[in-house]
Image (cartoon, rainbow, N blue to C red; front, side, top):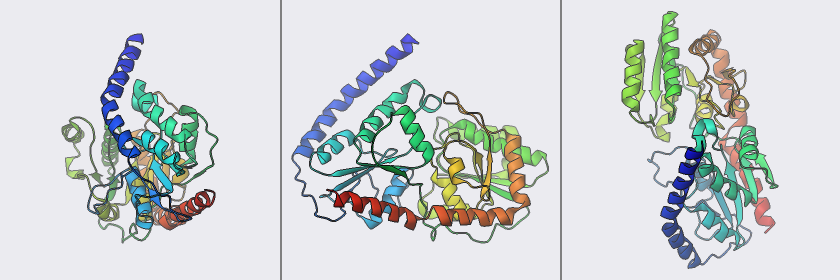
Length: 373
């Protein structure tokens, strides 16, 4: 244990030494900048991380920044700095200190934190900077109640005004079409896949359904983000004997996402302790019920009318997964009342996760912060 701790301290020291020259250059560049605060208007800056290319691949925190930037384009002279914990600029701490010293209000959007099951002994490498940024915020949007509780647990409590702002979806862009035709149930697993176990569980669920003579097809969509992932997934598909039932879609753009959702009946999203995933929200907006893990922020997002969540053990030390039979049972439950679940999924997204409501929530807070300046 002591050896591992020493290695972690050495790694952190090397990282700080490597980062220092760039940090110093950035601080000097900030000091040469003039910042004229706009008067009584909402002028926002996002740390320069918003991707302006409409055709670019966008994921995670940058998706919500795009929603904001369409209404409040990023300004060089600003009185509101808005940063997202899952997509901070490289020198966020320096930027925040410089902006706040000049009277800028700092709004922090808190997603998940690092903990042993996800990031092991290196959790503090992520949590340390996140803690420092959160403590300087003038207002905090937590992406779920789970995100707020995790931040208090691993980053420490802060005495800052805050509220819950679930991730949102463009209800008009992500909308239902006619359900897929054919006799097979079409499953979808989408997003960026960082954990082999999550993908293998989905594949094993397909194999379990086929063993039950339940006709099923799967589209595995999105980036497989671990070493040798494509070959490992191909090998597992071959070992399970489900090659004819599995299709593959590589990384996709937001513009292409609705068509991918509309080609499926059900989304499978078994990730453990997912803080506030956007993929299930987008899927529900397209009329897809969700099968997932009753952990993290998922119970706050997926109602009983819009999907089936499977109970799993509570742990911060190890990821816990539903069993393939439990996942298969959930798929069969949804398909037995598919029209009801489909209607419930769309209604849940419309009433709770619309982009218009999310933007109105932000506008109210921004106006209050500017008025108090």
